[in-house]
Image (cartoon, rainbow, N blue to C red):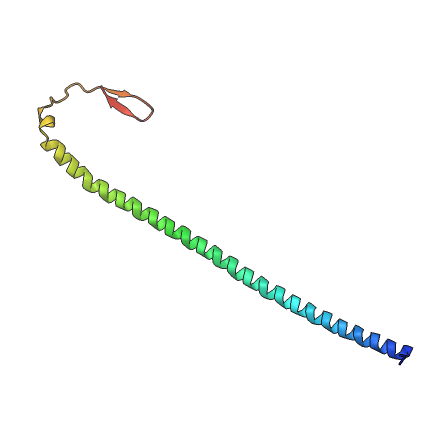
Length: 113
């Protein structure tokens, strides 16, 4: 059985139509996939940026709490240290300084001679 040129052209035309439809379908799926993946990427990157700001805020809060804790420790340590110095026998036996001379060791630092 031989095919006529009209039948061959009809088959080629139908194959071309099927190929165009398949190509258009794949193209539409590709474009939709790109749009969806772009949206997911934007969502994830904005979520990551938000978490970065939250992390920085938590670090600042932790630093503030640490500084406040150091202030409290210093404020409780100083009176205890002064009380210990006043009650120390070694300090009680030291003579008091009458002629105080101060030397500037480095800029802003002072030593007593």
